[in-house]
Length: 270
Image (cartoon, one colour):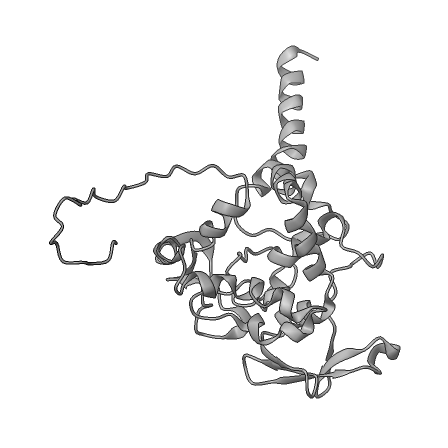
């Protein structure tokens, strides 16, 4: 066998085994396969997530809360603890039945029963690629094609909220410590109001990212953090402070004020 033939075989082998993994990092939607560890291809992204122990633990805790992940999956907009009911965006009510599923409990709407868990291996913790599903499993966000990968970002309607919706703010009783998460789950909404980061967040919220917004839960109206047909770049505000992503910032200094005129009319500094 000559050298050209060997080289051809080597190139074909490389294409078969390496290119699919490489391409998966840069193209749009692909699918979840049972047992596949996302971090094998997305090692850099996974390492970034693990860089901050506090952030990782907080997201693992949320991902391991089956009541919260069920709230997301049914399109919840409010939780009423007085009657253990989740109100969904299309008007359905999901009521907690502690006797369902052999005593494990389920959320029920008529004949429908649901308790969405991201603990796929059943070891009572979120490990490996399970954490990836919290932001990237399309079925969790009511988007068609149950096994497709999507992108949902920090200021999603049911994550940290945005200038239009912060639904989890009305569902904090789904968490063990409601007061501790009250501000966290409405952070995007809070940024859009009287906040030092307001202009930064709103400016980016008026720009489109490359991620399609879609129509979660079959609702025609786009999600609250959409700009046009894509998700906005509002989540860049979060990434700027809560990751190691570098930023290039130009600060415009305030004008110098003349204090030599003792008779000048008093006014506020802006």
